[in-house]
Structures are given as structure tokens and as C-alpha cells.
Amino acid sequence: MQQRFEARGTGVPCAQVTSREDLAARIGTADVVVVSGLWDNALLERAPKLRFVQSISAGVDQYGQDAFRAKGVRLASAQGVNANAVSEHAMALILAAARLLPQARDNQAKHHWRPMIGEIAQREDELGGKTLLVVGLGRIGGRLARLAKAFDMRVIGLRRDPAAGAEGADEVHAIGSLRDWLPQADIVALTCPLTPETTGLIDAAALAAMKPTARLVNVARGKVVDENALVAALREGRIAGAALDVTVQEPLPQASPLWDLPNVFITPHSAGETQRYEDNVIDILLENLGRLQRGEAQLRNQIV
Image (cartoon, rainbow, N blue to C red; front, side, top):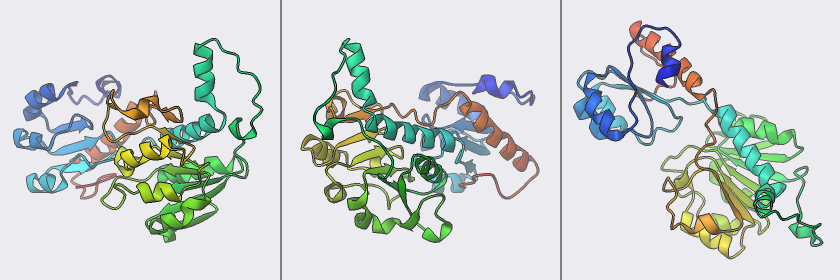
């Protein structure tokens, strides 16, 4: 991030830290902090000069918004910065599951040339005609809907306010109607933010409502899913599989049963990572710095 910021030639001095300890030691000198995973709300007490925090992630559940307001510190998210990357990653997970790519990679590592599969239900599958249920039809979910339509899928979108638009889905409904649509879905893709309403949204009852042939794809937040209920459903074959970019605890603990379940495909919360990520964040940062300097009341992606 520092390298890419300095390449813009702004003349604004900057420093980069890579640990919580270093951040705590240096935050007292900062007017602006660009951060995500290293953030701790206790840092506000050690930052008398701090005016603005630019999150490098779209999610902001790690920031205590009331504490920011009390200290008069502005906060903005990087919402939209990784919409293309995450939607493409979600589509890649869907394709990987349909085309059995994780199993192919495992076979390659064992130098095993798998013969043709006689059992129809165990073969690779096609996406055309399948139903994708997108839970959270914002920027990421909307683009995923459009990508899925290119594969001739039927797409049902769920969002808090259906009047906000279908975003490329065939139909859109309130997120509160989730249980009504789960039985129709071949793939359930989670692209929603983590809120009190979405925490534990995919619980044991939701998993029980899914088809036994359905798969769950999560590129949202780990806590949207009841992980224990998911493990039980996967072990018992009550759903066909899951592709997870996020988990409740990250890094995923070595003792987690998710590592060894044959019907689970895991990526390490990397859906939003691309070679352009830092520059995309810096675009938002520089726009917000300009707004602050001009004394504007509204920031891009303002949270506080």
C-alpha cells in the first residue's frame, strides 16, 4: 500500500506497519490511517491527531462506530473496491464445484488419471438451467447475477429492499423470504454484509431447507453461517457441498473439521485480492482526502 501510494506523487508523507504492536506504537503521530484487519477500537485512545480512517475492506463490523463519533473521527469503507474480484471469485467457486476441479487437482497431485465415471450423479455437471440463489443483491451479488446469466442459469436475488432493483437477476425478493426460496436453489451464494440480521442467517433450519444436491458458496462473512450446523449437514450428506472463502475464525483453526471434509473447497479469504487492489483503495482514499481538505460534509462510502 505504501509503495502504491507513493507512486501517486502526492507529497503526503506516509509510513506502513505490519503488526498490531507497530500500529499501536505509531498511531499517535497519524492524521489518517488506512487499515482493516489490524484495527482495534482501543487505538482511538492513543490517537490524538487522528481525523480519518479509510478502511481497505468493504466490511466495517470491526469498527466501533459510536466510539468514532465520540472522538470526532471520520470513517469510510472501501465498498465496491473489490466487487469485480469477489463476484468473479464466487463464479469461479461455482464453476469449480460443478466441474469437480478440486478433485482434479487432488488427482493430479497423486498422478492419478481418473477414468470415466459411470454413476451419473457423481460426474461433472453443467450450469445451464440450474437455479442460483444470491443472498445479498448489492454490487457483488448483482454482478454475480449477471455473470451467472451468461452461463444460462436462473438467478433469484434476495435483498433487504427488493424495490432497489433486480441487478440482473430474473427475480428479486425480500431477504426475509429466504426459507421460501432455499428449496428451489441448486446453488446458494452468500454475498451479503454481516449485520445483526444476517448473523447466523444460514442456520440448521436453513440448511435443512436446501436440496440434498445443493451447494453453499460463501464469499460474505463467516458468521453469516452457523458453522457447526454446516459441518453436520456436510458430514451427513444433507447438502452436496460447500465452497468457502470465509470462516467464522480466520485463519481457520487447524483443528477445524472443515479442512478434511471431502465435499468442502476452501480459499483463504482471498476473493477480494487482486493485483489492482491497492490502487483501487487508493483511488477512494485520495478522493476522500480531497473532500476532507475542502471541508465537505460527505465522504465517499462514508460510515461515520
